[in-house]
Image (cartoon, one colour):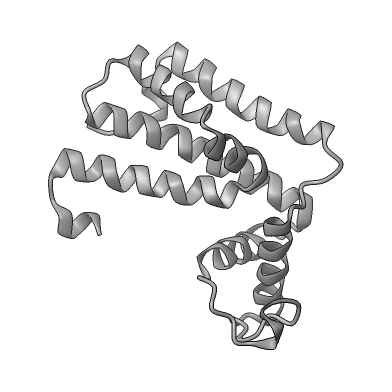
Length: 168
């Protein structure tokens, strides 16, 4: 059974709205969204978006050595840049909202696969959200929240289907 936005319970909608509001409100109070990691991701994403190719070398890191970092985050950012035409803060806000909503839905999907009731699913989301890693990822590094959401979706799919080959 899948999670459908039209079938969300009122408590689930309230939790989702609070999540998006808190994540965006936090950034109204901060000076900017740039951390060391976000600067690194956005710089390399801009390199990909501008050149339409994956760079072999990051000119500002790795001391000129070939880039050995996974390109997934960079390609996700660059792809959204190409699709929307957004840059910098606006692109960050879009990724923040998308990844936090996906994280919320993935927690609901996993807990539904585990057989939790609606109230327990929302409570599990609140507990997961209060973990320092997720709270930091959801506010400052949405790309990590996105990858963790994908992990939870795969785990929930594995639990429901019990098929490790398709889960990956």
